[in-house]
Image 1 (cartoon, rainbow, N blue to C red):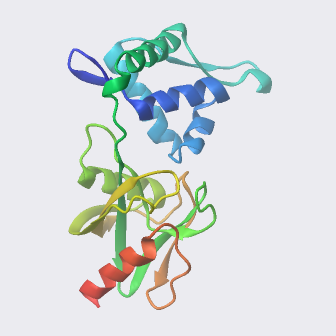
Image 2 (image 1 turned 120 degrees about the vertical axis):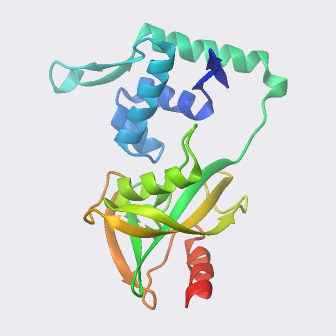
Image 3 (image 1 turned 180 degrees about the vertical axis):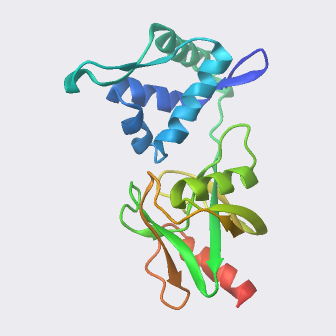
Length: 224
């Protein structure tokens, strides 16, 4: 982890994002590769730039061929410095699980699901959710992710459980904190991470990605 004046600058997740922007020449393509929305990815870049006080990613214009985003010299140096830091502390680097959230939004006897736009499980249905940001609580993350993927503004109702099996996600060890949420306002519409967002009758649920069927079964055991 790289910090400046006590503020978090760069970790493995942000390092990967900058690497992908540099490789693909596009924030949107890098975001897609990391299974996050463009807004989420750009938010990460802005946070890094605010702490560092330098432009790290620059948009290019000038015809279809030259459009996109590139790392500035300062961005490339930041990546280089972080890699050197990891080499120096190689013996102290640990692999840790990644923290995610999922939200259960109920409407009478129907549950809200999204059809995944990106791998893994592209084209399959799942609960709305995603990754927890650094300096963000799981409660803040689940409300944000549900709104980004479905357009709905929600509030936390109850903690359903924590799901931590090391093999629950093919991308690696992901621990998900799952909440039920109450809808406040907003209209149902898909975000950049989803192809569709719709309610399904609890008795006619489709095949689900990850371990989301088990999560929903736990929820139904509590409420039905």
